[in-house]
Length: 85
Image (cartoon, rainbow, N blue to C red; front, side, top):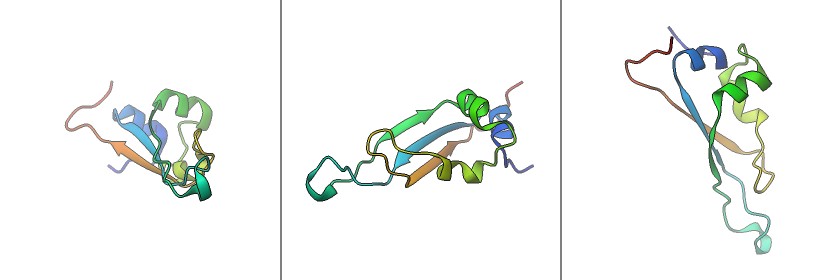
């Protein structure tokens, strides 16, 4: 079974992290990478995006709160052998 939506990922117990790939605009000429990391809350994503939202589109819908960049990497933490009821 492949998991393609936020609802399916949540039911499978997945966790999600996001990382900014942009540049920190507060530095001179924006030369330092931002690299802001954050654990995203799956329940909040479900409330705001809906359970049928495709996980492949998630990076396109995020924006870094630190630098405002839209170049975001999303990583899913997949549990091994454990399912949520």
